[in-house]
Amino acid sequence: MNRHVLSKINAVATLAALTFLGCVRHQVRHEPFAPELSEARRAKSTPVSQEKRLPDEVIPPKADGNVTRTVLPNGTRVFTIPIATNPVVAALVLYDVGSRFETPETNGAAHFVEHMVFRGTENRPEPGAISRELDALGAQNNAYTSQEYTGFWIRVEASRFVQAYDVLYDMVARPLLRQSDTDIERGAILQEEKRKRDDETSFSWTILNGLMYGDDPLGRPVLGTSQTISALNRDDLLTFRQANYLPSRTVVAIAGAFDERATLKMVKDTFGSLPPSSEPRPSFAAPRLQEGPLIALDVRQEMNQALFTIAFPTYGCGDDRQYATEVLANALGGGMSSRLFTEVRDKRGLAYSVGAMNSCDSDTGEIIIRAGVELSKAEEALSVIIGELKKLKNEPMSPDELERSVSNLGGSFALGMEASIDIASYYATQEILTGAPVSPALTLALYSDVSAPSVQDIARDIFRARGLHLVVTSRRQDTAPFLNIARELGE
Image (cartoon, rainbow, N blue to C red; front, side):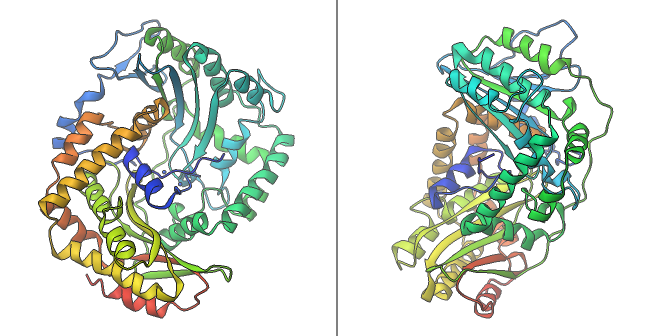
């Protein structure tokens, strides 16, 4: 649908993205496949709750703390997060499937299926019936697709949650996927794909993924291409859904003011009633990264600026180095006191918006730098950016800068956990991407444990010329000046 977010396991990067450019990455991007946590971190992360597997008729008592993780007999994982002071209840159903599970021929199938569940269900077959019922409840709902997961959510005033939950379950468990609806929705998705191409900011992500990962599934557009969208038929979508929308790959997270015992029973009676599957989850080879420095041009004659989108490969979401990487990205471009904002905008006036953020998937990640700069001074702006990366490699952060970055991350994290849907998303997404959710308190403690030498080590590991991938969106048609500047980063 229309949700655009980063493929992240926490709210920090999402807020950073919104802060520095007013836009977010299309999550139509953010196990054996998920790397295991180190023993040291796993020892620290016991704490969201005790895992429970329910016998058929047993509802467990509440776990210690206010977050309970329950595994139903068919493999469905459930997070219940009661918050008595929050009168809005949010429910998120997150499936362990995204565009990374597609073939070149079925590229776009996960996103297409996401659209189709809104067209009608066994209990609500008429197009528009779902929207009318949720509108009458005053509920909000939406869905999103990334490379690694697909989510469907609702949020509603607490007294109306049971009715809204019934609609959500009907959508995801009993969609009709009719041929007539497939033909109609295909037109809407083709228009979405065209809109994405027309939006230079959004389309730069598509180009960047292809530049970094080439023909690897991570390099393909989540929406698919106009060719694959046009070719997908109802049978393709049914086959894809039946192979991937399985209880063992389903996470349900509910946060807000609700009766935990009754709600857990409701989830067991619905999602827990679905038959288990013995189908193994597909596994993936390590992503094939294309070595840089690589530069791609998106030439748009109407542009009056040069838009830089720069990415360096980093680490998977479950990697212990993520915390130092977050601090590094924050110091570089996470706020108005960051290095890039200070040097590129405040001191030189080369850009209005500039910043950096850290994004991660289960087994890889990126630090991403965005800047919209004066066209005639594009080379100067890129030189300043590269210069700041070199400083981070060569000089450790000062104690004051480290403390400010850690404090900023903690504050942003707290703000990002304010709404019930954010809390539900936090736990469900971590479950999919790492398999070991970390409590908010521990997350903040791990940020505080980051040292200046560890941040410098990350900078030295990441900021190399061979890791640089740059998309330039502008009227410019020459890459040589930018390539020469990129090479100054060294190894």
